Image 1 (cartoon, rainbow, N blue to C red):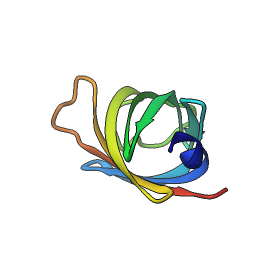
Image 2: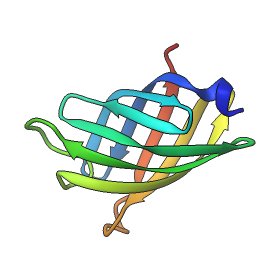
Image 3: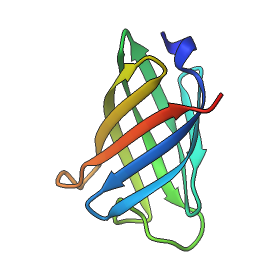
Image 4: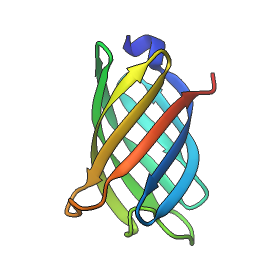
Length: 107
């Protein structure tokens, strides 16, 4: 399943602080991506239709983070349906901030 899920994805996300969108590349258990003000790097694993992992989000230019801080580590879990996935997680140290993420393949 992980090979079928790899590649370039549109990422749409939201928290109580706001919403946003960007792109993310998933390959060989590694996550790389970004949007207009943040970049994301991390790792993931797939088992059946479940995906888990963690990523670091860091600000690279001015703009408001939907996580409420300039640098965050997010541990996530989710479910893959076909080639898309729905994920959720909490930034470390912010248990009341839930990040919801939708991944849709672009390639």
